[in-house]
Length: 262
Image (cartoon, rainbow, N blue to C red; front, side, top):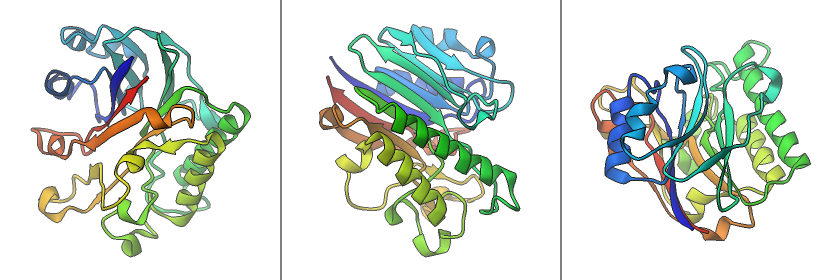
C-alpha cells in the first residue's frame, strides 16, 4: 500500500485550519501529522478536514499549549500515547495503519533560550524527554514504524544556516545533538529526509523575528521523518515545502513530506 506522509508544526490548528485545508487540498498526503495544535481535541476543527476527505483522526490536545494530531484518508487505529519524562504534556500520539505500520507523532520540548539545565528548567525537561524516548525505544525496538514530528533539534552542520554561530543556541548545541543521536540510535531509526537528500543545506523552520525570512534564509531543520530499519528502504521522494512558510499568516515551520512503498 503506497502512501505519502507529511509532518507539520502548525502553531495553532484552530488559527490555521484554512492553511491545513489548503495543504490537504493542494498536496493531498495520505497522512498528515500536526504538532503544536494548541487545542483540546474536542475544539479542533476536524470537520474542516473531514470535508477534504480526511475522515480519520487520532489526537491528543490541551488548551493553548502543545498538542499532536494525525489526520488520515486511510483508516487508523489509536495506539495510545506516552507522557515521556512525566511532564503532563500532550506531546506524543501513535496510530497504526491497516498495513501494520505504526506512526509516532512527536512534539519534543523546545527547551527555552538558555542551554543550561541549572539555569533553565525547560532545557532540562527537553534533555529528560529525549532520554525517556531513548530508553523506551531501547527497550521496545520499533518495527514497521515511522517517527515524525517537530523534534526541535537540527542535528547536522548543514541543518542550520550557520553551524559555528549556533553551537551555543538551543536546538543545535552539542549536548542536544548528542542526545538526539542516542535517541535515534536506540531505535535504529533512519533519517528518511537525509537518506533521500544526503547533501546540502536543508531547513524546515525560519523565525518570525526575521523581517524577510526568505531572503535572509536563516533556517534550521527541526522537523523530521524517521523510519525503522525494516521499512527505511521503502521510503523515497522526501521534500520540504518551503513555499508554505510564505503563505498568509503562516506557521514558522514548513511541512516535510516522504512517501513509502509498503
